Length: 499
Image (cartoon, rainbow, N blue to C red):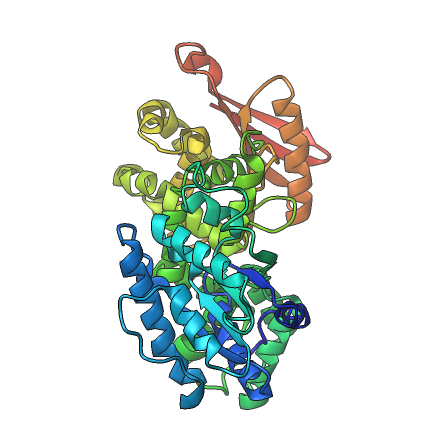
């Protein structure tokens, strides 16, 4: 167990003492609900406050009326109270119809201690129900703490600006103040730090004697990026599923690699939900430009970045990239699965690209892709939703289809990089590949230098630079655009493939 909201508890206590309303937001499965339950129980044990945690998700239906929304929320308060409070401190059974503000007022008026409400899934509400909910909080705010809860936390995935958007903030009846000016502060739950992940694994070692070595820890932390669900899922995949809770068996770095691949292949609910997120119009430009290495469009850039960070898709700091390698792999595979599955089996046999000693013949593989790209790319790219990153995704899909037969691909991509870097691992081989679009005369020389640095990082002397032309075949004929050149860059051999 890692205590969630590390370091934020004193600030939250200050807000409760100051009779403030505030927001807590974080991506799914980062420990929000666990924290809320702990906080309510802790406040009740200390004896100064009456506190419950309840969810308004049952009222989060787009076509609900205000009356139905109120009924569901009031019932949620009444249903959850006994899990936290003795009978004399619980609210009375509701007699409907009754508004949430009246119900909470009646409860607070009949108690001697102030009430602290922690409202989970607050951003699941829609339209008039959301507006009504926030207005009722605003109305009761004036009579706290004796006739309304002293402090209320709204908890969900998003910050207050997203509440405005979801509540049809373009509606002129919604002013800049009420009902949105009750928030004193907003807290974002960070992912686990290195120290917290190490602490979590050490607890397992103390309980079982099974050790997570430094090498295992580094891989696990790298793959999860400290994301709480991924951290636990990777450890559980190894300990429970792969080793059958046999604590005498050693956890190896290779086991972490396989656990990562298993999670990606299983596409559990947490990972599968990424498919819905990447189709969001505010997420799309961020994902697109991370994959292609492009620059972020100026219009709406700040809101889009904030939104993606709230969802946990990207890192909280620059460079802007996917939050962790598992998300990066899942998102890339989701986007190119149509390509990958449609590649003709006649050219997708892994064995055709292997030398007699079992090593991967990358020259033969790239020659096959060049021919494939020439004859299929224009029709395929036209059908692709993410056209601007289609060249990169098409090559990655082709390589993935072949490499799945016994190796793996690791990717590096970030906003503004101007490139996509791949490392193909096949047995003892490590093959660097850089993908670029030909924007201008600087693209090729810059790509050669960038690939040389990437090769240094991987400790390799040979690599491949693939430069895709943005022009159509009518503007630039295939006979001109397809080329293969060998360059020496800083003592390294670079195979340049133009297409």
